[in-house]
Image (cartoon, rainbow, N blue to C red; front, side):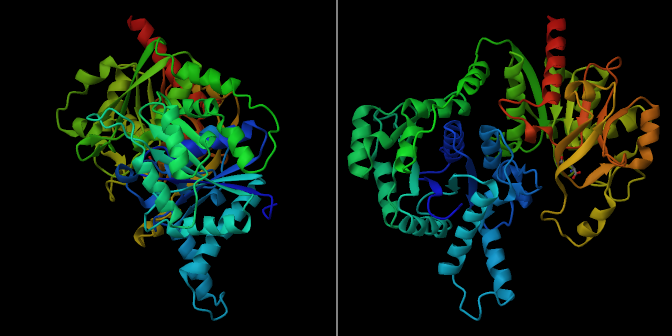
Length: 553
Ligand code: GLN
């Protein structure tokens, strides 16, 4: 039911970007779900890319792949992790998607000869998508995060769609503005003025904020709550404190201190169905933030780090989270060190100087040539020195290449991703991908989304999963070349997971007697790791890391 009575919460950002609209949206989702309401979360990205698959991870962060295969923004990952369930393609939209369908409809004479305009046609398409997302998920409340900041040119149509909805269903719509209250070091006092300006700016769209989430370095005091309430036309109990926290997973617990979920239900004219039980969540947060848990040193050897003078790990967000969940589960505290594989690329690079200090090494997903030789060096070191190794996608392909080169003696072994006419194409492009590459059809054309895999008995993968079939999410164009599988297996590599027809290699590993944990997956297990259900392969990898650390000690 998405007519009258279906509820909508719009989350908007004021003052500046990067203050955690995604975490607010996710937290609201979790809290209302705990209150017994079916919720769906929608991310609106105002850029013109049709999906997030073509964007550079250093610029935009990780591309999060949904079960359906849609390539989306990393916020979708947070939504899934907080809600503890899969989201659908309907829960994500970009301006590019919206315009693409309007234009396709126009080309098909779908507007009956009318002049097609941003308002109302694009705005109507936005609303159609929001309604469809609610319908597909069967939710009662939709929480919609509008990307960007209030005042941006790009997101104005989305805000206008929300305004219109509020006008039509005043009791069913509420607006949450996530703001920032700076504490300038020279003044030493929390300033509310930028928030007041942002609320005014939102007013100029015909929208009044009903809630203000006050992000700040510290909790907001009563005096400032009052000031914001009066100046911004918001009830005082709807000004919610959001101080900096150690872990984003604390956010919903903090919001509950200010009774956010009760206030939201009140604003939406919904009864409080039951007390939110956050016991399991709290237990996880306590374990994840336990500073006294023993430290595990994990190296992530990747390449999407540098942006100007800053090192950003956003490109590997799901990997970091997956490590945290499994660490919390086994009572450990993971300390992640980022190693730029370009450093290891140089001839004669001494991986042996840096890597022995780690309890486990991960090579995550990636594309292209840079950093490849460095990663292969790191993998060889992990294999020979028996350091637990976990390869994700490219990390698995390179693990197999390393094995082919140094165990099978195929010195030219490589992937055709970096050498088109390779003489030993151990990793090769999938046949159906060849034409796509030739015709430069890159957007949304990889092997994407969830596929089943069969797991071999008596392997590390099987003992971790405890199941014969699993389903995991993919994002790749290249595969282990079937022509090399027999030779690799003869020399000791085990393909412990394959596609159900046995053609595609999904997991490669070394037997436990040979190496404590040397395993790579063609898929991205990190995309399905959740706080309350950590991924078994990450957990198994970390357990091996604990054993190594404790043996050293
Ligand atoms: N570049 C590799 C491929 O396309 C691996 C992709 C990845 O790591 N996500 O197959």
